[in-house]
Length: 323
Image (cartoon, helix red, strand yellow):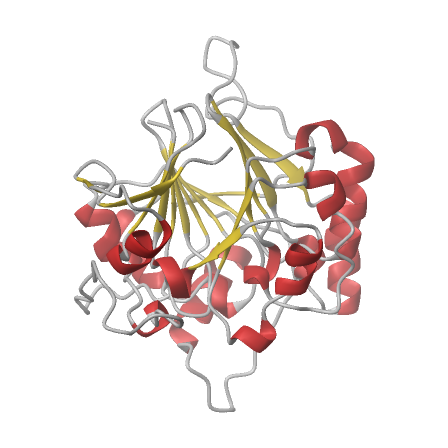
């Protein structure tokens, strides 16, 4: 396996890793609804230019079922923002993940104002976070440099386990986030190493997170093959100099209005990217050489390559290799 899915889920994040061990990791969730059957669209109804896939988000619960994924080994909430936990209650009730990776944050949310998010999700999350003891799912708070069974090694102490490397946060970053009531810099940042290359999941990591990573994990993140862009690829008053070290061969952006996406930071450096609004969902085989990319929007694939084809394995159209 070693297959990565980056889902088109409105203005949020949801990624899936199908590990070589057969275990499944889900990183963040958005637009998950067990009572709604949202159809995955396989072609755009829009014209050229804006391909309008944001208007056709997928439901992660249905997406997992459609890909014959019926259990989750670990669910990682990178940080306590609602666009990363939209539907957490339904997701956990439907798939009953064995492990829940969280941070010891003290975030609170005000639902007295109108919001697209459900207060039930926040209450459910708070119960997971604050209940003690809490064992279903097993809640883990992990830190930079974690090296433990299933994540980075197997039961017999051989490597790589799930090749799942936690680069951030640190205890200090979490404590500072609690002091400042700003939780982007306590976000999990996770490196996955497939046989075909390296994939970096960035959550909403901000400047202090990248300072820590470059100081302590520079060799791991240099010349990344695929970057799941921080903060969905949005502008967020950040220093983008970390891209000079990462030099990703390809980046995935989530959904946002074009004026809010950090195109300039990538264009200035000549770094390629794909957005959910263009491609729909993106699927990458991280075990194969050059990590082939498939997308659920046929029109986008047709625009980008003259030799696309549909794969029943990845349930998408071939777009390109990452090289």
